[in-house]
Length: 164
Image 1: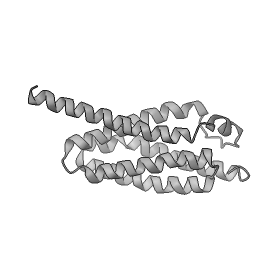
Image 2: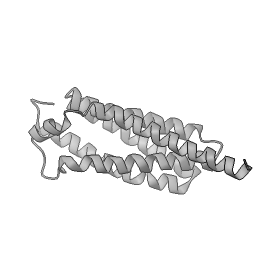
Image 3: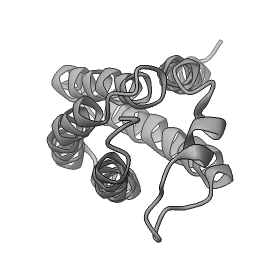
């Protein structure tokens, strides 16, 4: 096997690994959201709340962009450890949100969780940006969506004091 082919194979395997680990975190969060559709439907929602069906496609796209961003950082520098630690740390915090909100009905704790998640995403995006500009930019849609989710979380929590 030529050296070039070995490098391509290694890069492809790492991309698949990062996609798998990112989707694993998404799956752990999704387990906490098993009853989310019914629960979401029963909530008092603000006028700007998106329909329930939109969350799956948006998160699938965001998780894919996130994994590609992590891969770009990994292949851009040998100094990727801090960036990937931040990345995996924010994934854990992200997965916990679904459990707090949809499984355990803890609106206030879910809001605190998302307020912790936002600076972690910013730190990750800045760290990624330093290593690979495109990687940092790929996290911007995620940051914007989670910012929107924070406002939505707060609004739903305030509108549903008996449930959350």
